[in-house]
Length: 68
Image (tube, rainbow, N blue to C red; front, top):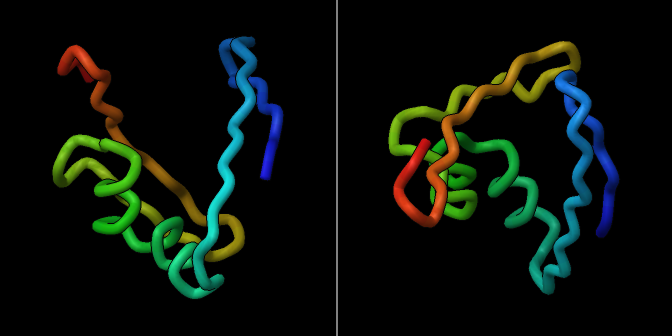
């Protein structure tokens, strides 16, 4: 899986992941706040998501040096 994105601030990035996992497990990781926070290194308690069409998503990511 690979996707190229551009942020509202004009920064671009490419996200690429290769997973050997059942589809339900991947869906859970991307759509459950607790699971997403665990694998994405989001700050505990910072993930909020509504995965319905038109929903919103928010998370505070933690960098390797501990910054947010």
